[in-house]
Image (cartoon, rainbow, N blue to C red; front, top):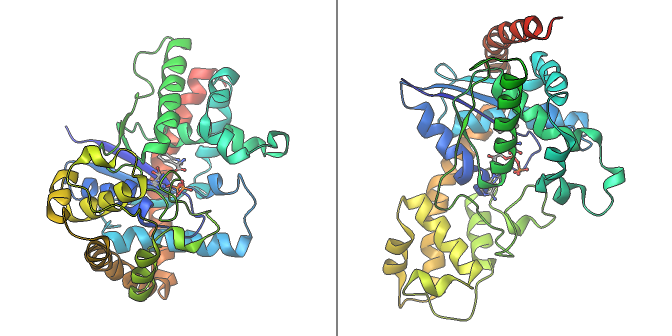
Length: 333
Ligand code: ADP
Ligand code: TRP
């Protein structure tokens, strides 16, 4: 039997190579398999857990849809929609927040990172964010959830919530317990400026990431300026243990070329970094520039993007409303 795939991306701007290699590339592959049913959600309710300027948010929703389509997701075959337009998500999130335990949420490392030192000032939404994520997944009986490595803990929480709900109401299989789909190699792309920090939308330095809307010159310049170390190119993976920046760049090259890390190391062993960086720029440009061009083209076709969302919302609503009705019955509402 085919898989029921669900995943989400926040419309918070600056979609980057980490989002592409960690998540979107996998979405495209899964959506091209005819046996799978795929749903890709622009999670605008998640985005507002930190303040968003309404005009920026609107643009970023369009840009995220454009990125999905430009990367190769066919809106006729997969459902693409935005979360806020299917009210079952907010409703299920409330209900599931009565199932999830404080102790479980207190363990979430992403909240600790995002809230920073002053947790008292973080929004309640930022804290309960993983419960909304569980609602997203469980409403669609999703069997598999492709995400980057940083979402693993949230997926485990989703599984716990599904199991507790099923147990509390003596139901075997009401909520499907979903499996994460995390690429085992190169699942976490790091900043170009610091090999220990995740490549991120919110990094204040634009040089730290390759945006999916970057032009050729910007990509070449960013790779030229990417941090490396003074040692020669490695000749074995073991040499990379403490060379985080070099490891990240070789990982990006491997992932884009569908090579193993070993194969990339063999190709460049004994050469110098500048030669490697030139080749790396080339593979990034080859992959990202066509996507970037297509995103820009689609952004000029707002009506088309709106139609995709409208159609996706209609389909998502049908599925989610049925599930919410059943939840009401189970709860005794
Ligand atoms: P973020 O703010 O972390 O970029 P998103 O909701 O936009 O959050 O993330 C979308 C997807 O991209 C998620 O599956 C996430 O795990 C993945 N992702 C984000 N950053 C990276 C990264 N640096 N490396 C690999 N995957 C990433
Ligand atoms: N929390 C995810 C992130 O920041 C985005 C997300 C929201 C998601 N809902 C989801 C991912 C459901 C997978 C499934 O990357």
